[in-house]
Image 1: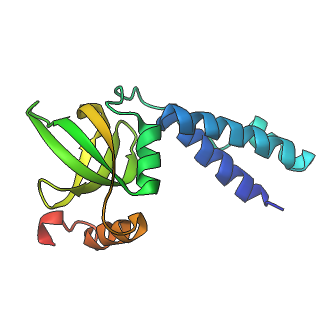
Image 2 (image 1 turned 45 degrees about the horizontal axis):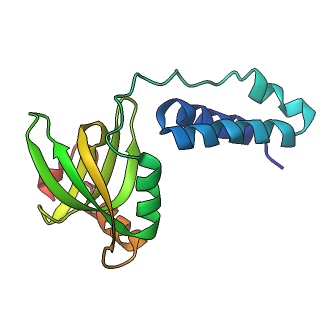
Length: 165
């Protein structure tokens, strides 16, 4: 059985996802909250229906440039995505990416993956994707192993920039 703190944590997390994630995950978060509400004992329901811990409503997130639900499926299956991408100066490039993570930030979502053009991990703001083609081609290795390589490449200490790798 869940404790009151666990119920609040689950609902708080689901509220955040509902306000910041793509439509598919937002719908799943609402469904999760409803399922928690019907399964917890009566004395814990006020933690859900009238929660004292809440997240702020989601920011106005720019429209997605690719189908995020399909991108999540491609991450799970280890398949490549071809992107037409606009950088912060509106320059267009074409990339083939081995997607490993969708990053859900407060104001934007990012696709993180191995970029064949740069031969390195890169972050792509999803709102800057001009076009995406979901390829049937699998990338080498397991998605989990590539995610582990990406995590190992991140700066280890607060304040350390990625240029110090």
